[in-house]
Length: 66
Image (cartoon, rainbow, N blue to C red):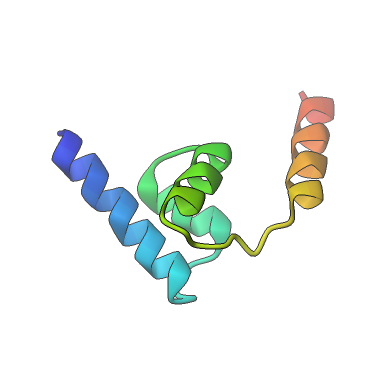
């Protein structure tokens, strides 16, 4: 099961890196939350196209909606 999860994450990172998936779609493909996807991209040395302020604003908006 862990190997399958790792494969999903690697696929998502590659698709994001190659411009084949958006940030949100990559997280969805990997089956992980956006914040974790951001961390994984950083660990792989892939720059996220989402700015920190945009991410924080999205979290703020989500909290207000709940």
